[in-house]
Image (cartoon, rainbow, N blue to C red; front, top):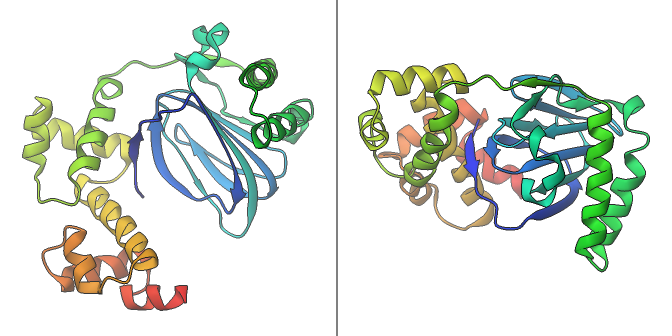
Length: 259
């Protein structure tokens, strides 16, 4: 499980693809996932649901969410800045009672998603795309309810924790280094992280390193030893052990399976 804080530069991004699998993450943008075919397991703010054809998940700003495809899915993913839809600003600091809309509630939304996607692939007229997004979000609001977002310290510092770890996970650093950087006691950081992310900081860093190792195994010709050291491991033996624990195959077997 790789959990990280994303920084987006564009006000609107659209993606269409297959087999969406993406680790837990959060960002300041709104994210809307539409399952077109197959099924994808989506988790948003700790709530899981198997999305099937025409089902939708909506993640509001700074909400942890993730996706995993067990077999096959086709999807459309829309990531947009809250500034794109200023008329809905008052909703962006709330939480959905449920972040999911299932097929019976998305029939009127689907045609506008199709038009938005066609415009994105074509002229990319910003005014027209924003108009489609306004209708889509209005229909989402019509079919869901909100609760007030619970306030707690982690909401202020969790992004800072994630940014620090994202910047340093390939290096050797300690919980004390992280806590000192943020100005909090190590035990507080450890407890907060475990409660919110549901794993220890050490396990989290290992997941992060192995995720990067899989990328290098798939996309480079570097040796396994080189990859082990580049991913922050002090020995290849430790790298092999952790990789096998998390991926259920050795680095060599994983690379071979890609050919």
